[in-house]
Amino acid sequence: MEILNNLVCVWVDCTMWCGRKKLCIEDLNNVSEADIPPEDLATLGSKRIFPKEPLQPFYALRKRTERLCLSVGTRFMGGFAIPADKRHWVAGELNKIKDEYQAEVKKLMSCYDKMLSEFIAEHPKWGGMIEKAAKQRSEIMGQFKYMPHIMGINIPEGMEKGSHIKEAIAGIVPQVMKEVATMAKTMLEENHLEQRDSTCNGVMLASMRKWYAKIVCMSFVDRNLAVIASRMENILNGLPQTGEITGADYQQMLKLVRVLADVSQSEDLKNYPQASLTLDLKKPAVVKTTRHKTYKGNFLDGNNSMT
Figure 1: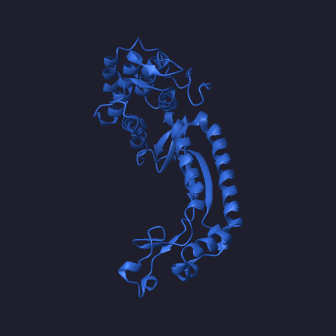
Figure 2: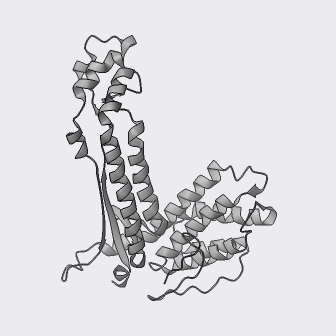
Figure 3: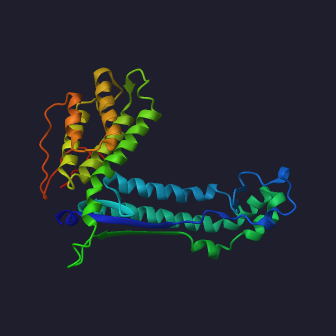
């Protein structure tokens, strides 16, 4: 399949220590209901044996990894599908995150004993339980891992009929628009766009340009994504690039967010380009959909172009 020549998959094997352990019956022997451990120490079925704050950077880096891959691709086969021509950029960014991840592990290990002692001191009544369950640094080190993998997909000769790759690829377009719809719904809800006094700032416009970038990057999979990207570009380029967005411009932006927020619920994604005509768009720009295509416009950092 030609699409596979333009597609690579990203899998990141990212594991970390959570600082928790199973709560045992022995931990609560002779403990009355009034003396149960505080919430920051124990929850149903587990107990915390290390403070959670020093572990937050690892969760943040994992989330950053996800945002990076989704900025130019979509969830696919347990990982992410991205355009092949973005593989070097994504690999470079993932390696940067890997370096940060390893630096955070070293930082944590260098002060592990001190932080553990402070945590025990903060919970003197339960210090024995924490100390008994505490792990050695060597044990914890093995639980931190960050290994990015970027690979192409090839169907072995003679296995074409038994492969379900066509079904998987068919799910890419709905998945892309589902992810965009989730972001659009979040923008509507968190910023109360329906209740605002018809004004918003450039931060929201920047977010919408990221949605546009995502759709452009994956438009080689299906022509409908290219059409959607073209229509989005017309609207976004017609909005003020600095300052507040008000009046008719605000209403145009709001309509686009609404359409994008609803498109994932549509039974037929191909209706989307026609449905978007209600936004009184200008004539859409021509978007090449051949294998060797060129998109010129602002996406990712606003300066890149995809060839």
